[in-house]
Amino acid sequence: LPIIEEAKKSSIEGPRLTVETCPHYLFLDSSMVKNGDSRLKCFPPIRERQQREKLWEGLSSGLIDMIASDHSPCEPSMRRHSIKEAWGGLSGLQYQLPATWTAVKRNNCSATEADIAKWWSLNPAKLAGLSQRGSIEPGKRADFVAWDPGFNGFPERYSVEYHRWKGDCYFSTQDLFGRVVGTWLAGRKVYDGINDQLLLHNGSYIKCQD
Image (cartoon, rainbow, N blue to C red; front, side, top):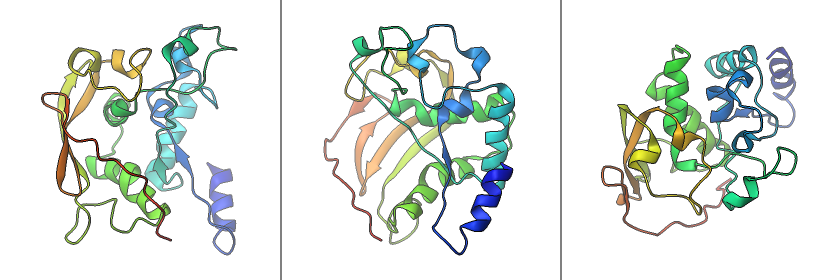
């Protein structure tokens, strides 16, 4: 964290510096990774508990700007190798919000739902110059999710919608807090989380506005 702090001070008059972390680094520590579990192969690797706690400190202080997915899906057979040969990166984009919220609760962090929205939505939108996205305000695009923070359960027991490939998703096998109960794009409901049903396929590439 001191290195990040010094680097950010130096970037005030130079190139802009932003820092991100990912849900698996906030959720896991090395003691939770079973030997040979290729589902959790990532770069950098999962570190010790003390390092995880430092990441939460960095988010709380603002030294770390945002949380990003580092989403890396692949055909499940590509993970069924030794750690050295297996595909790297975690899959399960749709479970990363509950994974983040679960990490908050398990680590007794003081982060609120508003903090999660800032790290996952507002700050990434600012970085990409997407001024019409990232927050719920009059005049902005109605891109948002309805969220039940009190829900608790294993995603593999209530969710069958997958991003590209089903299988070998670590987070789907974990008892997670929180659940997306609906997703809207430009005011149109595209996902029903109660019935786990995709309603519309209308995604598109979003260009940076800056």
